[in-house]
Image 1 (tube, rainbow, N blue to C red):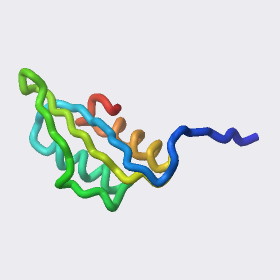
Image 2: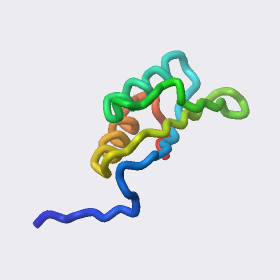
Image 3: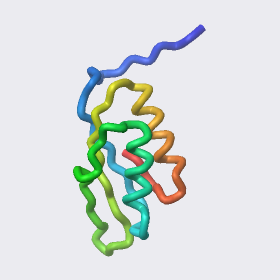
Image 4: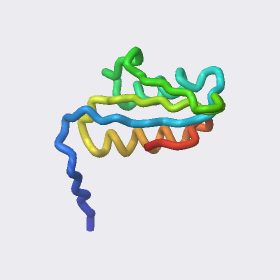
Length: 89
């Protein structure tokens, strides 16, 4: 028996995803590469980046045009599996 998931989102919609990781060279580029695999129309120039208070970590917000719950689930799984990523919200 297959279980159907319900969601409160209506697709397509703009959906912000916050990705946090150590502030190292290549982190933002790695995040961009993962996001564009799952949301090819994402414009990397719109990434919002904020360093932590001590500058050790970087928070990146990517607002994607989400077309389905499956797309978002796949994107979250890919981001959380990346070795440079610590947290995805």
